[in-house]
Length: 458
Image (cartoon, rainbow, N blue to C red; front, side, top):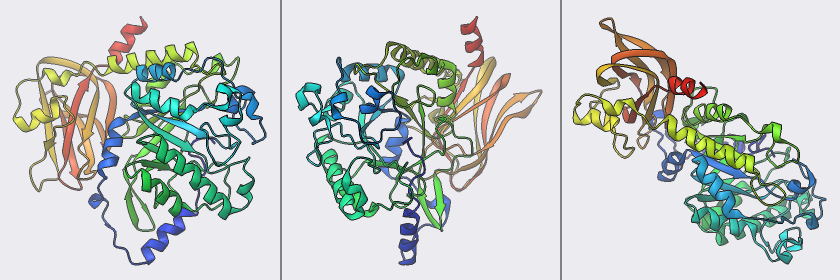
């Protein structure tokens, strides 16, 4: 692993071949639009990736493929306990690592004996992927899988053609037998210069799962639907434009930012309590990823009992409570009467949106309060079905008889959370300075969050 690292530069050549073949692609970033599957996935915003395998029982992060299946024997496995904890965090979907780099499979695959079939757990008759998938859906969570291309156990790995066939057979099992998959992770860590048969891999997936979002590094350009942020800190440190360019070929590739619940650890380790991240750290990571227009993927690791540790369960619950509390008091809902168009940006309903005047590329959304109101955060969401159109914007407060900017920035995208020193005013507005097309805004919300944090700490 770890998720998303160093994936697979060879796919760039595939994109170049497609261009050379004469395919016509939109050459203006503003003309590229997301698929319905991508906008639905982006609305999920927060997912969890689960690591649980032989590494869990051997105090390892990276398995070498030599671990005996006999070590895999959780005494109190409870997938429903996992999902209750994850649901409490506010996550909307889970991705199960069905096979990590050591090659050990968590479902009874017909392709190898290096799987839970050879473990003592449930006398070799268990199906962990199946149990997790059922528990996820029973708790209202969507389900996806991670299947490592790098395999340190399988002898066929030495023969690229034979291994590609083996890998696709594993993928067929996962794609056919575990219901609708919201996301499929392609992580190329450890693959070095290895070239996999990506066209056939994606063809195999799409045969059975036409709507699955494929996550991969940006280098796997032609076939991925979402891209890695470039770090495992769970933050987006740059302007987030959903459309990216490789050799003149443009695609809508939203960002997913992955980060573990425990610092630097994706798998559970004993005597490791100091690694549990603080609530403030997790909230900051959420706001620096989802709040920068991306997807947040939090790594959660069950322990060797087959349970999420109590401390982790508590932290996930605290996280969910904190996120709900922070964004439960939208000051903009207390605005003075506004026109119907403006109201659609202030109504708290993501299914409605404000539109700038036709053929206009700049416009404003103003919130008027009945009395001076103090605020220090805004949350803005674009309606992305027609593309990402806001290029430059300002958050402005009416003070001393004029509009004063408190934020001046670029790129809103799916969701942008802006923080600034507290301002008191009776009027605040979103000023769209420049757009690539007709700007449309789903939500413009106003909050006072730093005061709530200070009060809580006192």
